[in-house]
Image (tube, rainbow, N blue to C red; front, side, top):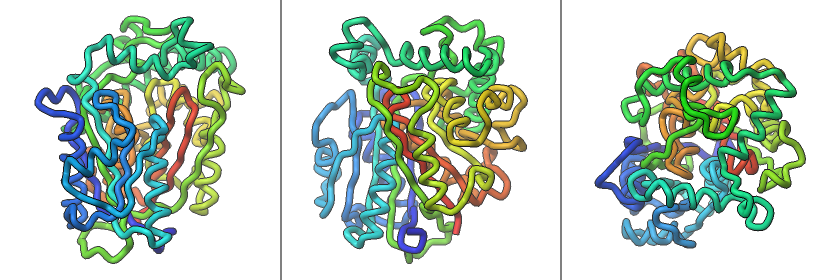
Length: 382
């Protein structure tokens, strides 16, 4: 795979309240930027992958996008796996290119959930992720489902609310270094602890915001004439244990364990080799669970590590250097793509004030549903 597939271009829009944008205009802006970064045009694209939109719901969103920008690719499909969509799409695009079916696959995701939906409509749409028979009638929400995980994890492993808060504080500090981030105002552990409870023990600042924004990546055959460092997908893996939290076999073990194991094995590296990690973080507990399940920290260690500054520059594992979903922003399926775009820029040495010195190997991970669908990626600079 590493000899046959490269990430040739990345692009993203600002994130936050983008009043004059639509779902499709955001898609188009990110796509144009990614293609320009690769030195390509829309006419070079022979494969397109899109995800989904809550503002402009359509069962064939990828066809809608192609119609919008005026292209007719030979391959065109939609992938819907929640926050894992972007990572799964990258693995799918790499397979298409490696098999010779496509030369340049454009992956683009985005939505304008913040300005395109009312608060009530956004909450109602997200409630549909709950099981129609066994969860929705009882009023469960996504924050409440993750709160169940947090309660159990804190009980079993001694994680404290202050340690979760430290994760949010670190992410906000990273976002302050990114000009496109939604939330850039510094916060403290005290600020997190003083924010209102959303679903105990998760408080407002333990939760990601709803944002407008889009991101895109171009996956290509090698040989593009560019002066940028070459970034390749070295390994990928998936893990799926359940869809609804009511059916989860455990509240502490999830598919990120299987997904990361497969990705590390395919790439021939270990967690200790990773220079920078970009891991899905819809809530502070999401990241903490994944850090330990993936193997970056032992059970019960990630919270203390976050409090000790181990997840930032100069620490054991610089993580979510763009600010993650918690502070960079979360615009639906594009949220997971923001992590991958940041990983590519870190490996290229293009992250500016956020740059991790000597970053040659990056880990990216997407999580869809309630820790339901998982996809891990190992990216490397060749």
